[in-house]
Image (cartoon, rainbow, N blue to C red; front, side, top):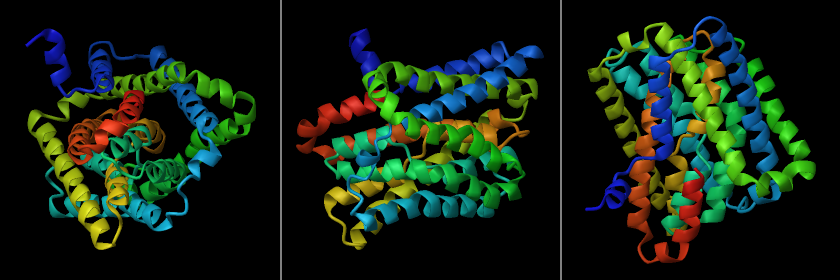
Length: 337
């Protein structure tokens, strides 16, 4: 087997590899003193820029495509913001001492985040599902999540010692206002933003990498690697896998019982089971101010890789002959993620 074939056979997302690299860099060269303050301000700017660009890129018309499938969107919304939190709370109730409080906060954080957009649509396309409905639902999930996720955090994470009382205002100032500014600026810069999607994709990913670096720098300064061991890492990995498997099974069979078509069931399964790392990390850095954010986001980082690997395999399996017709589009979207 050649080196190129070997690399292509290893299911590792290069973006995840870069994130792991940032964790390693923060471990070896964490920010200290004035560097910490500069990193914090840079992170705030990066978060605002990230959501401004999301607002400028989003076409209102495109987001409303497929909106008539209200039953499908309702099921996805309930899976994302209802089923996930219930499963997370049930896991914590059944085994509260299985993880440390910070790691359990991280698991609950996963459960209250919105869905992804790019990978949800990509996997739905590869599997031969309802792409327009997936695009509408995933986009709506992120819009609604700007408000719903902080509300759920206030209700659920406060009991785990993880929600800052000022987080709602921070969310409005650093997420919602830049997003709305981007929407209002769309007539002026929307075309340029869409035309430079690759450059903006680098800004998108660079912002997340900066957030990871600053979060883990703070974690290293507070002894993060003395707070988690290999057993806990394996336990988190197992909880993430079980959580994803349950949601996939429930959305698959539940949507069938509700009488949805095969295409709609695929969209429900892939959109309802995803959680956004791109939205989750900025939200965590705001909602969990004063908490060990580097430790808390570990479950989310693991979950992100697990969902990509698992759903990529499922999409190929579902796709069959439909993959030949939709694979090019789906592959392009997946690369964008």
